[in-house]
Amino acid sequence: MNEWPAAIWASISAMTAALVLSLIFVLGSFARQAVEIQQVDENAVAIVKEYRRYSPYDGTTNLVPADVITAIAETRGQPEIWVDTLAGAAVEFNWKWTNNSPKELFKTDYLTDIFKDIGRYDAHIAKDLNGVVERIEFRRQ
Image (cartoon, rainbow, N blue to C red):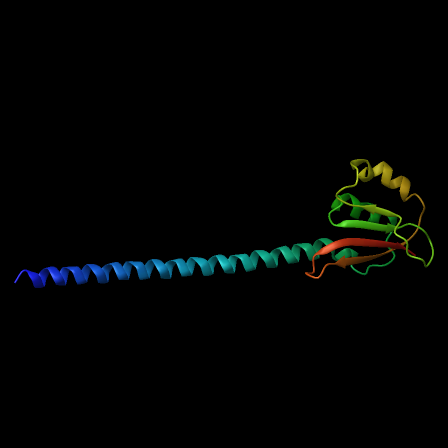
């Protein structure tokens, strides 16, 4: 007669363990979904920040040298800045600022010496296949 209560207690214990494991699985699933939603939100915020940061240079015309200097000083070579300082229709980027550029190239007095000639520039953003900004190009008009 004591065999039935032991079997009942064993089955109740097994069902309780299954219930606890099911709840753990469901809560883990909810946590994973919450992290995925948060990651999507963070990605969207990063995209908007990047757009706001570089949109002034996307297809903008008639920029003054101070705008080019500001872009160089703000980016510090990431993304790269390519500048065509020669007047005329031919585009030849004779100045490039990258991550590997020496720190002296980012100093204000050095930049003002390069851009002492008054001119206007057209800006263009070059992106990779994923839409990440690779470089900002400034062409002299």
